[in-house]
Length: 110
Image (tube, rainbow, N blue to C red; front, side, top):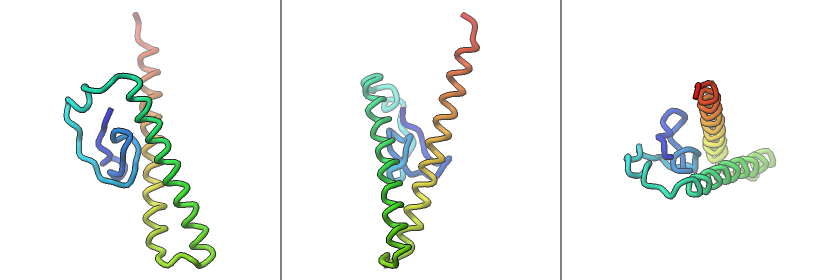
């Protein structure tokens, strides 16, 4: 499932669900429906979560460099920290929507 990331900052992949730092356009219907099923979704989800982890590791590294004075441009840290923050916010928002959808399905009568 690919979704526009504009709601949180338009930085992402996992088919548009989690950020990687690049802007993405809204997907076409064929991109959404023409996938390989659950295994493809699981792979994209795992890639997106790994991307989020990598972003946070980069911010941690840059923050140590900023604290020790070895970072030349503080802008690099600021940009990376903002991207990681937005990525985390987006991940939490997507998770919350998935839980809401699951709870709504569970409330439906057969």
